[in-house]
Length: 198
Image (cartoon, rainbow, N blue to C red):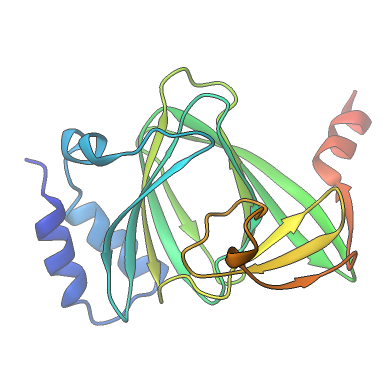
């Protein structure tokens, strides 16, 4: 029998630690039902975010990407986390900042039923390019995400955004804490690998 959001939050509130491994173990044990999560998911474009719980130790969010939806390249500040995929599928792009060059080095598909750990310092983006059904994921971060950076791969700018901002290049000045202008170049190592493999 599936658990509920309430039982999951009770388990998280009494957790001994909030490592990605512990978060995954708790989520596996107290996984809320798909019906409960889907009923709360906001299917807005380019993606929706529903805050379920925010404490000093963790935050729990439902993310929902409709077909064609995306979020821009970003990190999660000091947070680590775990994501469980309830439905649809999404492309996960992982990057690293290497001597002033932002490198896309891995692309994977996250499918319904998958767990994905978000490690410290991870830079990534997500895009629903193949699933007609919206991609719905339950995200748990610890500590709550703060000091998030959003990377503009076209201009080389890094936006330091407010804690309530989405992971999208901000157009609203109120969502911007600071901007580093033209401070990195961009390289798609995934595409280079595909070209060399042909």
